[in-house]
Length: 252
Image 1 (cartoon, rainbow, N blue to C red):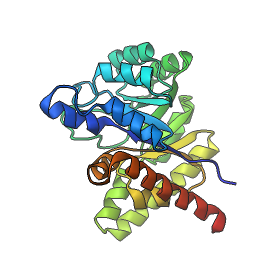
Image 2: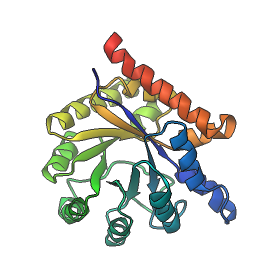
Image 3: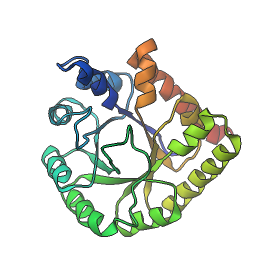
Image 4: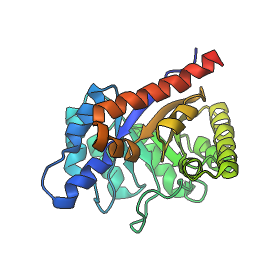
């Protein structure tokens, strides 16, 4: 039987809507609780250095109030490591971050930043926080992640999802093959493999058919869909898509 596939719901953009007017509504913690009640296996939130959506008190409340694992997305900086060590989430996903970007534009360059990343990975790991590295499906990056002894990688699926959405079939196929090869290489290196960025119902179903991918982290698409059908229904639909993809491993 294939390994179970977890769904992590990213609630960043509930906070984006809240911050458009200030105040407390809509509450990202309430969204997290609703997602969990609907079947989410965990919650992801990115505390950016500019606090453009999730805020420090959101992270503290999420840790205190949700009953599922909290995945703390963060830049690899001393300040963020300090906050993560104080918050003690289940996991910390180290991501690249630039203030000018609208969203995360690519994977973390663990090859170029290996010397600066190594102590952060070690400190978080020693504190019992499971470290994940958000990287492209690039062999050199995957091999360096294993060398740095990060137990988990999350493969950046954005380029593949964009190509699928734009109908660029050749590019989509190329990016998909990179993901397939990257998952195989990471698994052989002893890394746990997650995936995320740009996933929708269809692409989540497709990637769910890769048995060595054990977690998908999905946010922007789901929060957008929730405006029309509600968050619980969106979680149910995403879970159904993922389960259908996973079931195809057995039936295929």
